[in-house]
Length: 122
Image 1 (cartoon, rainbow, N blue to C red):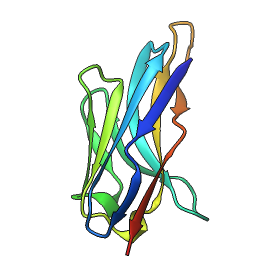
Image 2: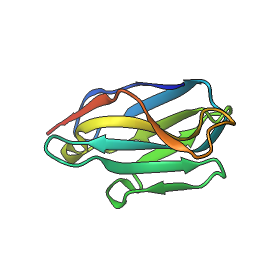
Image 3: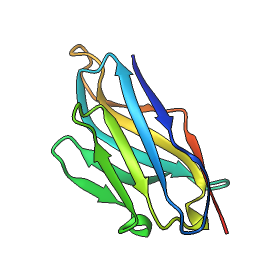
């Protein structure tokens, strides 16, 4: 089984920065991509940034130029550097891994962390 553990959330003022980290452990056979999602109160979960194993990255328009996603050397860790934070960035941020835990698993699936709260005060 794959476990994802996030860290780095907290409370910051508008314009501040935070760095979220996520480490995957357990049985990991193939990692297709890792990503960060967020969910604000009363809203649907939103894809924030993706990092593929091929090295490409993608961002939701609202965070482009402010957030940077990066993978560790082992490709099973992912960080999200968040700069120039705005109150609308307030949400629970979830780490996501899409891949296969074992060779016997025919298709990839999503694995999720427990979430970390990011609060940006106005």
